[in-house]
Amino acid sequence: MRNKLVIFSFIGSTIAPAILATTHFPFPIALFSFILAFSVVIMTYFLVKVEWKEGGLSIYVERIGKIPYLVFIVSWITSYYLYVIYTVVYIPYYVLNLDGLEAIILTVIISVSVYLLTIMRKAIYAFPFIFFSQVALVLPIGWKVSISHVPLPITSLFTNILSSSLITVCITLSTFINGDKSFSNYIPIAYMIGGSMLFYSSFLSPNIISSYGVAIGNYGLILAELYALNNLLEYRGISTKVRGLLNTLIIPFSLIGNLNYSLFYNTLIVPSLVALYLSLSVLSFSSVKLLGKLLLPATLTSLALFIYGRPKITSLKINL
Image: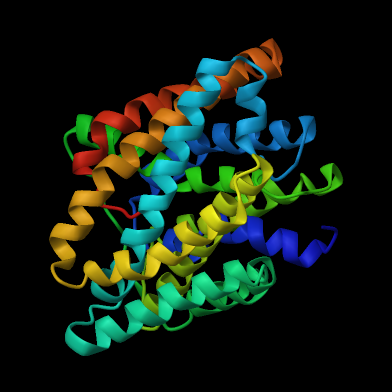
């Protein structure tokens, strides 16, 4: 894969800039969250310089040992498969505030479209549209000035900084493609773009059009996750039939979510995020050994964030 625009758009979509542009965090929280989360970006950047293939993060963990690899692979697949299913329901009901038949129809459209793009192996080529359209929809044109205030007491400020730092963890999905190491600079560039949107959201209140950008941003995350998941499974020798079954089941599973979307979402998000932070904690621990002492501050900061993320999941209100 050598198409620069496609690769950059894929990486940019894992940041979900439209979601960042509508967070409306107080500026101190946005600033310190950006700085803390940059540790994950640094870790990801240097990992793809080691090796950048469809096996993604699993390649790096496998170098450390069989047990860390097995823990990572099971928890990572579990996390992102659940994420794909519940986010299909999240978009119509929580992002666009739809209900009834409209929400059901959109659930079908989302699940079927990501399924078709995945099995046709064309998913990667959808990301230029996904990335640039969501950015266009959250440009602060016509937004009202609305300064978000710092929460008190100071413990609340600290908690919000740590929690919001976890928003950008999906940039690690960018490792699950057959990339050229010369394109590794796209990772920090994409993060800077997302960061700029995180900052202006502190001072502006988004308009109603931005919700469509957020919907596209979440759709992009679903597609990126399913694309990365299929790349990983294929890289590890999982048969086409098994991959096809997992892709197909997303449609009926997401339709079940329409029966009680709130219960469905709240039930799946907890094990999904527990598994996510477990897998990324294993990754960060492995990266300490793999990347050496020079990058020790970045890898240890990432490890601390992921360890922190596990006990905070039940109170996390942002769809990561």
